[in-house]
Image 1: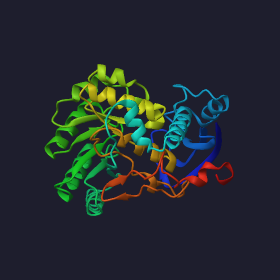
Image 2: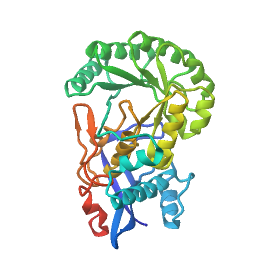
Image 3: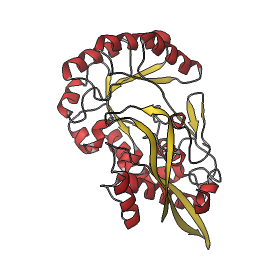
Image 4: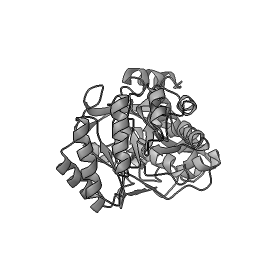
Length: 343
């Protein structure tokens, strides 16, 4: 295994509960396998995110030791993705096909539907942004809420629905509300035919999340999975939808395991990125493509980066991302990254 550091700037700072993110720092990971005597290199990406994974220093240390595990999920993601890419390239199959076969979930998909995301703004600007996303081909749009007073957010939810009467709409509160406010907002979302509200309560409130289910709109958990195992969330009946981040879960294999566990329990699973570079975004795309009939996923995040590790071989068209042709992650599209001198 070899790894090299990188830093990718965002187009503009992204505000989070842990402070603004202005860039994404991580490591491009390479793992080699032999194909009839010739070396095949697989690519992975380890890009820690504060509040979700280990620190950058701990990620580097785990990669240096060569023993990334559950305590260092970003490092494990980088290694496991690179190994899976190498094995898929060695056997001349797309990574999603190999993942689907390994997990016994049938044929993988050739494309994955993705959602657009609209950030906090006025009702009029929210409506304009939603309308623009739908006109550009997106069938599913997620509205960020929770930064304003509930009444203002209710107006934004209604404006979004008026702008896109036939689209699937989702809302994401990022844990901003208390139980009473969350219940009121879920009722409002249900009246407007939203598909679900993501993280309506703080991450640790499993009991409150469970009590919100059945309010007429689905409850999705995201941040909760940073502090609770999938099994604990399912045991608490705390979600209708799990939002799975391969970087935070420790790799494509663990993400598919989590998706299968959720679906066996009657809970939907979608895949999202953590504002990753192109290698990890492609990894998340392949994971999503290996989940049968996966709903629209949060993979449309490349535009948040001002620069990237390489050109993206899976552009978004008509609200979907097509899985690249060729073995592994993207055939020969990322060939330059396979050579240490080119990174």
